Image 1 (tube, protein in one colour):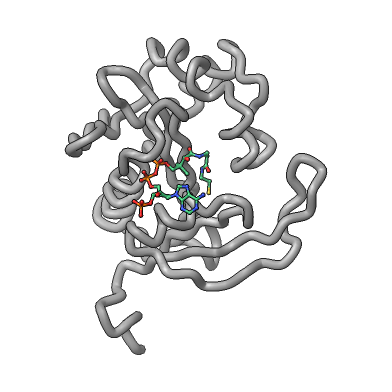
Image 2: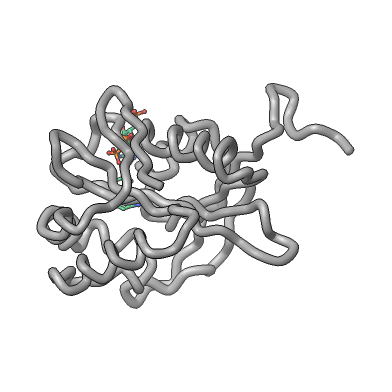
Length: 182
Ligand SMILES: CC(C)(COP(=O)(O)OP(=O)(O)OC[C@H]1O[C@@H](n2cnc3c(N)ncnc32)[C@H](O)[C@@H]1OP(=O)(O)O)[C@@H](O)C(=O)NCCC(=O)NCCS
């Protein structure tokens, strides 16, 4: 299944083999790596990009997408589905090339992929863990309707530093009064 969500400032779409060069250009950036898990490569090589595109497009349902801006893949966004008693939950993750920061693109992408997760993947809950030094990502989640659920003390070891993580989440059935009872 090919996904394509056309938004005012970007398109959320399936990864394509031809995206490899653009991924390397935008993802090979320490400022991005510093805010993601260590499995996000740094430096980011063409081999990493090829492997990423192959993995992202191999197994349905498709849950990892490119954020395309101006005709090229400028970032990525995806949902990692949880299992067992946490089925129906997913962790959202995203990054955007620094050339495009500050234009509302990540917020637009998070809103759209959250809606996709609820309506098309049947998710009940979507969450994200943000490192304490990343206020812009916290702001993105707040603008997209996520709530701060807690501060996970010393949850992260990144770049040799122990950091707190901020847990943000949104649930499908929450209205203005909060989650439905029962
Ligand atoms: C986080 C990231 C995705 C944001 O992308 P973006 O497209 O610039 O985000 P948006 O423009 O939608 O929103 C950014 C918001 O953060 C705000 N912001 C930026 N720097 C900030 C700072 N130092 N302190 C507080 N707010 C800040 C912006 O003003 C904006 O809020 P506003 O619309 O209220 O003014 C991008 O910086 C990125 O890829 N970072 C590296 C990877 C990453 O952090 N991924 C998320 C891991 S949880």
